[in-house]
Length: 484
Image (tube, rainbow, N blue to C red; front, top):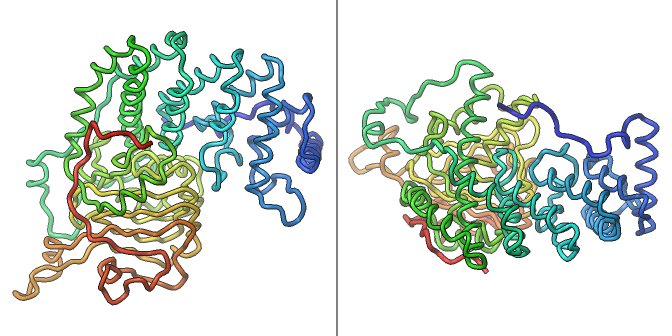
C-alpha cells in the first residue's frame, strides 16, 4: 500500500504552534548568521531537517541557499560530534529516516546541489566516533534493505558504499540478518515471453492493453509495479554489498555464493540493450557510489512488474488523467515509478502537476535512461525513446520542457517501396540523446528529432550542450569491475 502519511517530524514540539515555529526560524537564522551553534541547539537543528526550502532561513538577501544548506549540515555535524550519546542517537535516527524518505520531506531530501545525500555526509563525518558506530551501521543497513519505492536508487548505493567502508568484523551481528532476509525473500518479476509478444496483436502504433479504468486502479498499478522493481533493486544492491563484505569477512562468503545464481538470472533477463559508449561514460562519471552501475539505469519495456509490463506502466503514467493532479497519493505513485522503475536519480523529481510522456514504443528494446541530479520534468514533456536519454546534473528544465518533444529514433521504413505510417516504425534508427551538465533546453524549441542532431546532420551542435548518438546493442556484464 502507499505511504499513509507525509512522513514524521523529529521533535515535533518545535513546530507545534505559530509562536514556536517563528521562534525556531529566528533561532536558526541566528545560528546560521553567527556560523556557530550551542549544544542546546542540537534538537532544533535536527528538527530543521524538515523545513520547506521556501521557508528556510536565508543568510542575507543574496545568500545562495545551497551554501546555506552546506553550512547547516556542518553545524549539525559539529553538534552531533560533541553531543552526549542519547541526543546524538536521536539525531542519527532522524538522518536515517531522511535517507529512507520516512522523514517529512524538507530541504534535506530535496537539495539539488549536494554531491551526495546530506545524511551520508554527516554519517561519514561521525564514523570515527566509536559510541555511535553501531547506530550508524544500523541506519545504513536499514536504508540498503528498504523497499520504499520513493527512495531514489542513488541513496541506497551511497549507503552501501559507506557501510562497506566503515564495516568492522564485530558489526556482523547487526548487518548479516537484514541482508540475509533479502536474499531469502520473495521477488516476483519477469519478462514477457516470445509467445506473448508474437500474439499481442495490433493495428495501431501502440500495442493495446487493458488500461486500468479507475483512479485507484491506476495508482495501484504504478505503485505495485514500483514496489516490485524496488525489491529487485534491493536484492541486487544487497548482493553487491555482500560481495564487498565477503572480501573482509569470510562469514559472508556463503551468502555471496548463494546470491550469484539469482543475480546472474536478473542480468540474463535484461539481455541486450541499446546504448552508446559515450553516453555510458557520462553516466559512469556521474554515479554517486561504487555500488551503482550503469546498467541500473537501463529500462526494459518487456519486464513484468506486478502483472504489467514496464511499457504499459509508462503508458499509464503518461496518459492517465491523474498525471497532472497535485494529489498526494497520485504524486507518490508517479514519483515512485519515475525513481524506482525509470531510475531517476536521487533528487530528480516529477514535480507537482507535471505530465511526462515516456513511451518507448519505437524499437521496444531495453535502453539507457539516466535523468541526473536536479532535473525536473515539466508539464507536457513528450519523450519517445528507443536508444535512451542521458541528462546531466543541475539541469532545471521544467520551464522549457513544457514545449519540448524529444523523439529518440528515426522512422525510416521502406520509402522506396512506398511503405510509411504504422509500418515505418518497424525499421528505425535508434539514438541516445545527451544533455550535458548545467545546461537546459532553450524555450520554444518544440519538436526535436534525434537523428537531425547527430554528427554530420543538419542540426548538429545547434543546441548548446545537446547531442545525439547513434545507439547500438550492448550487454550488461555481471562481473564487471566496480567504478573506482
